Length: 351
Ligand code: AHG
Ligand code: MN
Ligand code: MN
Image 1: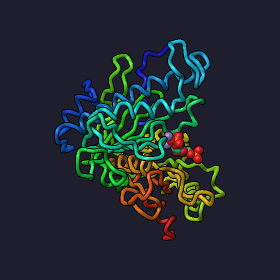
Image 2: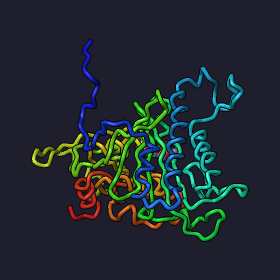
Image 3: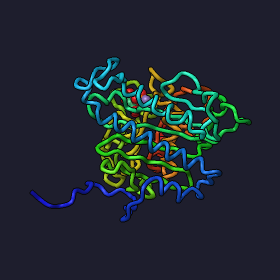
Image 4: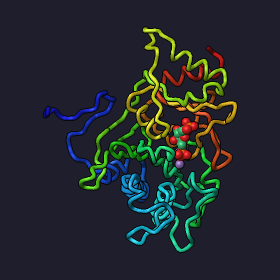
């Protein structure tokens, strides 16, 4: 057997630190750059890391359902066996409702806002999350993730936040990120200032360690990520964009390769590292697209843009949309700047 180190096959634009830096140390050392008054945002991000570790632990048991007990039954430890999305959702709620750091939450899995129980203190932040993204992939052992989005509260007082605290433009986010439960567990987050960092969970010590410092998305990629099963339902602009990407032209690096996991976290993570474009445009069946503005498009859009890319509906900037509903959907293109600009040209009829 070869004794060569195992290295990734591609070389994304990141700095690999040669020291061990835990996520909590990193967050605290960077608290100044995210103008963290009172340290609450740092604490909140540390709580996200804890939540990610708790969900990762359950995800790693996903294939053992028949052995450990079916959903809805009581397992050998006397605990109720939950669906993974319910577990992840509860994990977020339970970890944050008494943290004293958030005043209201919203989850892709809950119809309305999640208030903070009266007995607990309310904080200055607003948390939105997709507790388990890509859930259709769980049983096939394919990567899934959790996505989070953080705002500063705008409502006055110490009571629970309001719907207005939640219905915000993506450009107002103070932090956003995701946890990817893949071949390893990774947490990637940004608090703005063009800084996006990735941490890999070392399961032997139970800590996220800085592994991808200062992620920058390449300006142009050679991969597109789209569910082409809906090709015949796409509108003219997006279909012509796909045709263009598939044409052969060496000078513009075409044809592009296709990669589509069907878990947004995994598809966007690859796009962030290797470049290219992730797209979920509107279709004749779902003209407004499928992905949720508040739980998916905004946080991923912030990460992509902070890494130097772009996020667009095809005609408008994702981060400038003013949401009117918690579960609003949105057509989406995000990734390398040049690739998204090209998509916009097709969508708007310039090409
Ligand atoms: P969720 O599991 O949170 O409902 O999200 C699934 C999303 C997203 O992860 C992925 O990009 C997309 O749905 C896949 O949809 P299609 O199966 O229609 O391609
Ligand atoms: Mn999702
Ligand atoms: Mn989900």
